[in-house]
Image (cartoon, rainbow, N blue to C red; front, top):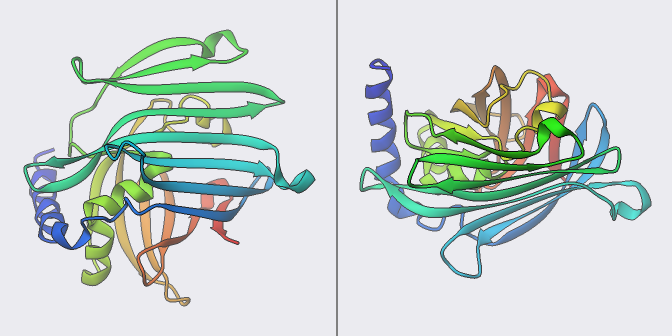
Length: 252
């Protein structure tokens, strides 16, 4: 851990130096439609995000539709809320607050909700499903480390809010250590292989150069997996590739 401290400090300086130029990064309202392909087939994805109506939270929504019957059947959906905050008095970040995730396996609903218990510094998870082992309430203490946590389905908005993406692209270098919260826990572990069976996972996002298509590529190392996030010249993400899972998400 001691070897990591100077690196984290360097990261905080990088993010802090550009916080004023990325004040609204990750809070602009948007809605995009994307294609999803994985080992189970092809799907339509609709992503929405921006400031919530109360102007106090950043909200991100994610819905996966079947492409059959006009794409009207929802197979998976999530909504997460985070609160804009500051770390070390200068680092902008989104603090996770609550989430709801639903997925349908064989037409049966599996649901998990997370919430933040500030008093115990823990993540509370409520599960509802047709199976006994995936019901009830569990509590997980937040792990120590960088102090930055991002819901998986809100990861792009969460990281952009810190200013890291823009700064790393301009510098053509940079790493950001943080923790991923699997807002789909424990059901995402049933869909994708080799993911740690806990709601938290230590992660590092690193600038990884520019593609032949002029997109900027970042690699996310998490839970023994590498996921590639590609951004265009406007710092808007265009594609996600998760090779180990045969997963591709790209604009229509």
